[in-house]
Amino acid sequence: MFYSIKRLIHRIRRRRTLGLLSMFAVLVASVIGNALTFFYFEASVHPEYTLGDSFWYSIISITTIGYGDLSASTVGARIGTVIFIVLVGLVAFTTTAGMLVDWIFDLRMREQTGMATVQSEDHLLIIHFPNETRVRHIVEEFVSDDKHKKVDIVVVTDTLQTLPFSHPNVSFVRGSPLEEETYRRAQLDRASKAIILSTNYDDPNSDSVVASVASVIGHLSPHVRVVAECLSLSHELLFSNLADVSLVYTVHMANNLLIQETQDPGVTILAQAMTSNLIEGTLASTMVDPPVEEPLTYQQVAVKLLSKDINLVGVIREKKAHFKFGGLFLSPGDLLVYISSNRYTWQGLREAMG
Image 1: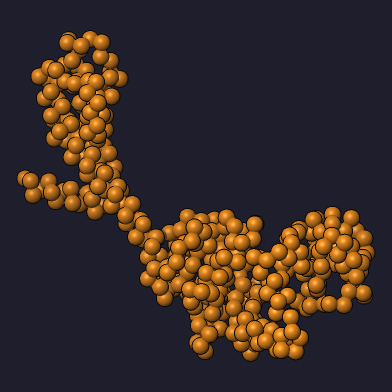
Image 2 (image 1 turned 120 degrees about the vertical axis):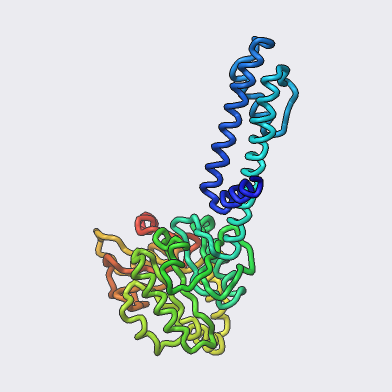
């Protein structure tokens, strides 16, 4: 008999949801049974005891607190206490408490090992984990911006067992970046942005993997804005069918910056400052929204913005960069790239221009 009871308890503990509901039902039954027994048998001795007092006595007794303000004095009430509290209630209470502790511990372990489903919304996904230094730097840069300091970040990779660092904004999902189940746990459908890093600078297949991941994300959640790292300019064709993916050629840009600093000392100081959220005055971009009521050249726009300490650097039109503003007129859909201490909406820039 005892063996059968132990097996039953074991099965209930393994089926966590059913077990918790079962134990909770037993707890409720124990409290109600003891309260009714206490109220019925103690009424003749303590007529001042109410049904509420009986439930108070049952709850305090089953949680082993026992203030001593109430106690069973009749034989019937004491037998009820032994049956409903000692034999049934305490066992159910300790079993439930143990199951809750197991559940919390298991949830924590699943989170640490990247097997839990994250509870985030409008978050950023970082796909791949080339090394800790790079990922930590990306995280710190992203959250250093005032508008993004509370945004959740989810790191997705299949190369780690646990995340090697801790950050209040960062969660970890372990799984293949090419599998739908991984993105289900990463809540891709509720994300807003994704950064796809190279697998490794020494991996010749990195760009093809990045392109495949970008394709999967675009298929599953087209609304997610994807920024992908591409190591070689010659691999641009891999992304030709992914119109909404922004490519960043990190190695090419780093090489260009090395040459620029060699030829023009001081360029890297400015480049580092204007590409970092940690330093006041950073590169930002704003799209021109329709309608454009006043036909202004970008030279006029640049002068107006400069009076507000907003430095217009260039204009992106149809994926082509323009730096000569004299004959270029303001047009809806243009992307203004500027250096400023703040990021502006188009309405904010219009107000700055007066």
